[in-house]
Image (cartoon, rainbow, N blue to C red):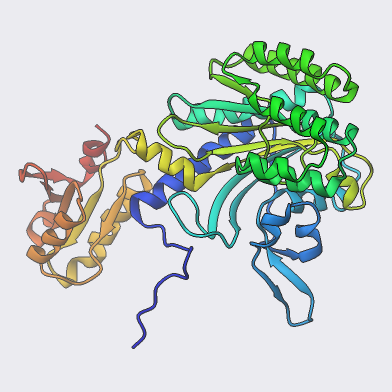
Length: 424
C-alpha cells in the first residue's frame, strides 16, 4: 500500500502550528480593519499572461504552470498583486479611489524547499491603489509596523530603498529596461559583481558601485549622501526627495529602526519607487516587504494609476515568533470532558455538554462508548482539565461528579451551579 506524504514543498499544519497561523491571520485582519482595508478573495488559478506580465524572470521560471481542459495556459498564483491589479482594472474600475484591499491565503512558487521557504506558502497582502502621495507609502510601512507590533514581535527593523533612484540613473546612462531588470534581479540576490558585468559603461558601473556602498542605520545621513551623489541626475534627485519625505512621516510614528540602503533591490519587476523589507536580528530572511508600483495597473489595460502595497510571509512570521519564544496561547478557558458512565445516560450527559457549550465552555463529549476508566485515561492524554462524570445516582440528586484531572481531586456539584463553577 502506498505511503502517501505531502507533495515536496507542501506541508500539513497541525495543532499548535495551525493555531499559530490562525493567530497571525487574525492579527492581519485586525490590522486591515484598523487601517480601513476591505478583504477580497481572489482565485488560486489565474491566466498565465496576467501572472507573468511583470513578476520578473526568476518568479516566472518558478510558477506552477499548466493547461486547463480548454487548452488555456494558466498558473497557480505566485503572489497576490497581479490578481488585485486585475480587479482594479475590471470589477473595481469605477470604485472611488483610493482602493484599500486586503487578502490572505496561499501562494505558490517552485523554489528549493528550505527553512522559511516552501512551494506552498501563506501571505497576508495589502494594496493601496490610487494615490501617488508620500502619505500612501508611509501608510503601508506603518501598517506593517502595526502588524508586527500586534503579533508581539520584538526588535524588528525596516530595510528601505528606492528603485526609482537606481532606475533613473541607469536610464539616464542609456541602459535599456530589459538589462535594468536583469541588473536589479542580481542586486536583489546581492550578486553585485554579476550585476555590474551586465553594464558596458564604465561611468555607469562606477555610479552603481558607489550607490551600493551608501547604506546606514542613520537614514537622514544616507538621504543627505544621496542628495549629493545624484547631482546631475534630476529624476534620481527627485526620487531622493520623495524618499526623504516618506521616511520623515514614518520616523515620526514608529520607534522601529530604519536602515536605508541605496543599492537595495527586490526581485519583482513592477516596482517603481520606495521598497522595504522587515527583519528581526535572529533571522536572515525577510518577514515581509513591499513597495510602490505605479505602472502595473496600466499594463493590465487600466488607466495610469499609482499604487503601493506589501505582503507579509505568514510562514516566516511563525518561525520568527517561535525563535523569539513568543507566548501566543495563554490558556484562559478550561476544557472539559463529559463522560456518561452508562449507555442509558448519554441523553442527559449530552444535554449537560450542550448547556456548558452554550455558556462558552469548551467540551469534549465522550462519543466512543468507552468505559469510564478508559475515557478518563483518554482525557488525560488529550490534556483535558476537568472531567464531568454523569452517574445515575448523582443525576437522581440533580448533580454530577466533577474531577480535576491535574490535582485528581473530585467533588459533587449540583447541575444548577455547574456553569457558575467554571465561570468562577
